[in-house]
Image 1 (tube, rainbow, N blue to C red):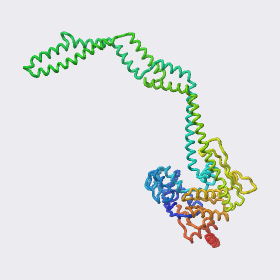
Image 2: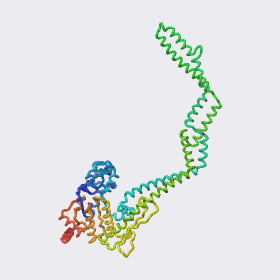
Image 3: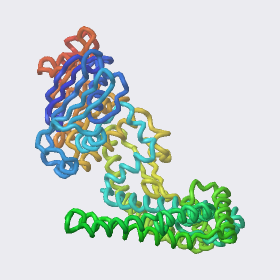
Length: 546
C-alpha cells in the first residue's frame, strides 16, 4: 500500500507531499492542472525512464520519494536475493541531477533501476489514460489469461525449455554453416592436411634445427677456436696446465717453511682439474662438430620446407603453424563426421521441440480452462455497466511456431448487440465500451494478482450518467480489499466514499490537497456545473455524496 508520496522539483511541481488513504482515493482537477504530472512522477519513482524533462529548477536535484507498507506481500525473499533490508514499511527514493544522472534507493541502499522496476510490479498497477488501446496487443491478452490461470510456473518452465531449444537451433545453424563452408574447400583442405602430415612437424623443431644449422655452418671456425683453447691449456712447453702444475709442485715443496703455500697449491690443483675438464670437453666437441656438407644440406632443406609452409599459411611463428595444422585437421575431421554430427544435433533438437510443445500445450490447456470464467465475469460486469446485450468471447487458436509465450494466438471478440456476430474488440468497440471492458478486466486481475495498490487514470473516459455511477460503484467495491487511487472527471465517480484530493495550479505551479466534506461539495458541484457553481449544482452534489 502506498502510504505517502513526496515530490520535489519535478516538472510543474515545486514541492508537495500527499498522505494517502488505505482504501479509496479520488483525484480530480481541471484539465492541465497537473494530474498526469503527478502520475508521471510516480512512474519515474517506480523505474520509468527519465525522458529529460523531469527537472523544473536546473539548480537543484529532482527528488521523488514514497513510503510503502509491504507487510504480508511475501517480499522477504526478494529483499534477501537483492541484499536489501526488509522492513514492514519501506521507503523508495529516486533522485535525478540537473545533468540527467539518476540514482534509485530502496531504504537507504542504492539499487539498479531493474531492481526497482521488479519491486514495483509487486506494489502498484497503473492504468493510464491510453491503456485501453493495449487490448489490441495480443501479448496483453495472453498475459490476462496467464494471470487468471496462475500460469507463472508453467510459463517459467516453457521459457527455460524454449531458451534451450533456441540455443540448440543456433548451434545447429552454426554447425551447418561451418560444414557448408568447409565442403566448398574440402579438396584444398584435404591436400593441405596431407601436405602438413607429410611434413611431420614436431614441437620445437624449428628452433632446434636453426641452432644446429648455425653450428654446422660455422664448424671450421668453431673447431679452430676449440683447438686454440686446447693448445693454450695442453701445450707441453707453454700450456697453462703445465705451468700451473709446476707452480703447485713448487708451492708444496716450500710448504714446511711457508704454510700458506700448501693452501695455494690445493687451490691451484682445483683449478687445474677444472681446466683439464674444459680441455677434454673442447676435444670432444671438436670431434663431434664436423663440417658435413650432406648433413648441412639436409638441415637447410628441412628449414626451407618449414619456412615455405609458414609463408604459405601466413603463420606468424612455428607455433602458429602447428596451431593452424591442428585446425585444418579438426575441420577435415568435422567434414568426415558431419553427417553423424548433424544427425545427432537434429535428434537433440527434435527431443527439445517435443518437450517445448508439451509445455506449450500445458500452457494452452490452462488458458482455455479460464476462458469461460473470463467471459462470464466480464459479461456480468458489462451488464452492470449498462451494456445489457454484451457478448464477450475468448478465441484461442494454435500456432505452429514457438513464441515467447507459447503456441497460442489469442483474440478477444466483442459485440454490444446480440444480433451482431462478435468481432475483434479493438475493431468494433467504442471508446466507452473499451473503458468498461478494461475496468472489468482490471477488477479481475487486481483480485488475482493481490496487488496492494491500483491506480486508474481516467478509466471512465467515454461514459456518463448512470454508467458512470456504476463504474464508480465497481471502483469503490475494489477499494474494500485494496488501495485504489482513481483520477476522474466524472462527478458520479468522484462522489464515492473515500478520500478526495484536488490537483490545482497556483502561480503556475501544480499542487494537491485533500478536501474537507464541505470542500467536496463545491468540487463536485463545479464538476457538474462548470466554473460558476450554482446552488442547484451544490444540491445535486450533496445528493451524490449522500
